[in-house]
Length: 432
Image (cartoon, helix red, strand yellow):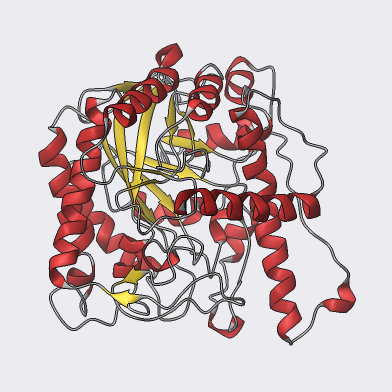
């Protein structure tokens, strides 16, 4: 029989996902001033668990609270207080209701740490993001000892996740965060054992995977999220991704998620170049643009090279498209993200046949074609467009964390403004 979204998925470690729909990771911003989980996470993830997905991926849980993706991240940084452990247990209990898997995505933001969090982020090298505005500081290159510490931090966070009731972990190696930065020859200009050849640039990822597996054991799901490409000239490319995937295939991963892009090239949310130098952007394949899912064409190439289970997130909209991707074995799990910000029950509806498509609310700012052109305001408008969409969906998560229903009528411009205000307030609370 053909595999469909309703089919269970046995994982190499022995666990089983009840169906093939997973909630993709999305940043929540619900952490308290000490970067602990809150009642907001409990409300939000219970709602998603009751929505029918086989597995939920959390948003970034940071392994170092000095270098986070945004204010309001949860962080597991050193020994956890009794209050922090209790909060994580409640979070895990809510997210594993309804026989749902809840996997903690563990991450280090690297040079993509906002200046609101830290004005001097860290990275493999001191190369700064080439984006308009001053929201990101110039990074400092990590020392060899600090890199080894990062690996230990990932293993520690994974252990805490297992011990508090999460049913798996995902190591974030995509989207321009620290591990992804090490993989990129454009960002990683080191000449030691952590830079240069692809083998050296992949060392941080591979050593992290091994440390995490040793820490959690062979019967606990371990996943990796990797870019299919950075979509930037001189960056981590698709051929690199295939080679790294083959190395990861030997590490007994339980799920390998294929994504793409960075803050400079946010293909993960369907947007293009956001930098000061658009000429460095790589053009997407026409076949990928035409497809329903953003990264499915790239997944085909990786599928031919590896045996581990694959997950593709981004752009899936119809049950027909999801089932076709599964039946072809191009992917084993379908990731849905933004649609669940608006309809947390959409997995159940898709599984039951009550819905044939996700009907996501895709919002775009349109501030007038007269403002578009080869000058600084063009980049500002692109930033407004990208972060406005991001803010719109993030505010829907905050609403659900407060026990409210999503508001699809929310204006995108007001979402951009309110999202920025919320980030500033949260950052100020962290610093008190």
